[in-house]
Amino acid sequence: EPYKSEILPYWRFKTPDIARESSGQIYELFLEYKKQKDFVGMDMARKFLQMGYTRSRRYANYKGGKKYDKDGNVNDRQINEEKAESARIFEEKWIKAREDETYLSWKKDHQQKYG
Image 1: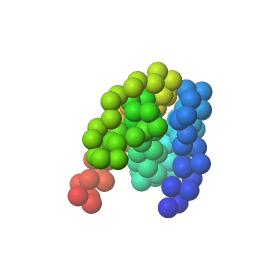
Image 2 (image 1 turned 120 degrees about the horizontal axis):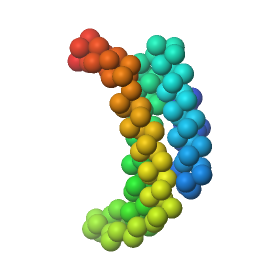
Image 3 (image 1 turned 120 degrees about the vertical axis):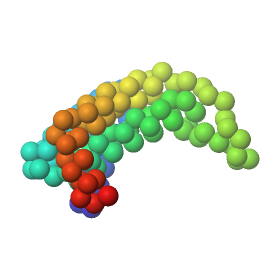
Image 4 (image 1 turned 60 degrees about the vertical axis):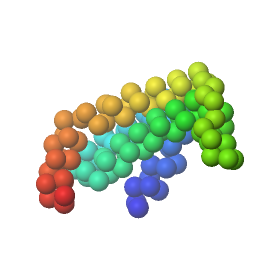
């Protein structure tokens, strides 16, 4: 907090259109945190973009997002192209955020300072 409350309302990925809007809003928050020189906020926004990608991929690969059946066995993949497109949309913004020069510089400083 407060980042979770600020970012979570925008975190949606059900369709490519929703994912496009959602990832765009979260990336805008990333840029706003950057303007405010708030590394932690930037990192949280980056993390939500990454989670949008990974969660979309899970739903793209497995019906209902369920990788394992009730016995703990891995379900067969059933690729859902709509969800895969949502994942690609989030991945694009996630890569843009994680490769941002300012973000990388502040991340390095943060790691040196806090471990």
